[in-house]
View 1 (tube, one colour):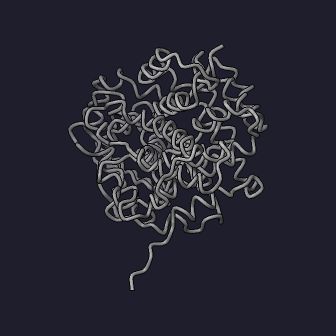
View 2 (cartoon, rainbow, N blue to C red; view 1 turned 60 degrees about the vertical axis):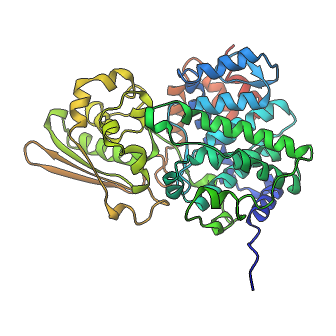
View 3 (tube, rainbow, N blue to C red; view 1 turned 180 degrees about the vertical axis):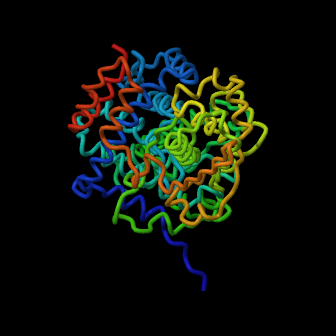
Length: 457
């Protein structure tokens, strides 16, 4: 007898549709506010990025009026366009949050979606706003873990885009007041919008930065269509021709609903202290600790062996020629040799280090030549729940120093404190009314007013 496929999409969407503020703990709300502040910092700074300007110009040229803020500008437009711009801006500087098990950037999808809609619906309460965001985090993270990030990467897909659109559809559905049946259709519609190619790696193109913006915009559109009665497939995730079957050779559908309601994926989301790919964060932490502790100078280094997680290998290690000779900032953001060189030479790996000047520096190029990247099964054991790193620095005097990092800085088990996060925000957002924004976020004030504070006066 043939057994019916479990209705995973329906069960997950039904649970998230029914989620209410009283179902969330104080810890979950605190984490949501924490990640909102992190998002606002990267969005404000990212609004100044070279890759964001064309998006702003496109929206300005369209001249479509609305009440949703395009962060860092005087523009106000329709929610979908604002979400596109703000998601793209926030992903431009590689300092946005990352869900560990899903290897997915969630805040840059869910917060642009929620802020844009909150401004168009000023009666949305802070509690409803954060509940919608938490639900979106769960939807996208569970989809990413079910498709398996490593398998997804091998097929050339970027989970922030492909899985993020499902989360955006859920967040938008909740803020638009959709019922469970309508939300299920919104998720089904989003399945036909799930796109995001890793080909940006080939030339250091800007399309990765566009991915969360597109996911947010499409999620809003999917929910709006569902609100008007448009129907999507109710088995979009687990169906024969559904998302998991098409986007992974080895999906694990059960992960869509494992432990649902016991905890929330927003609590398993990390923030970044370094302005580069998440797979580079742990190795950079280890190098920084060694060079600072032992006062290692660049000219004392003979070689540095960096063990990189296998899942990150195609992102930050291969192709070797490009990773050892990055030509653009995007390529540098995904070059383990470059990140390692920054940590040794400058004892930092922030926005001031990921620049064209550093890419062209002969000192940096020389140091990159000393970086050896390797695989080490010892760090694979507990991935993706843990993102370990191991680094060995050999000096010209024969001394050898080794460091293993279990949880990179910013991980929920090695977090940035609220004070450290506030410091990160102020660094990223000079010139804005930072104290007022921080107060609005931490005190749970109107989401719409928070977004408007991030526009140019």
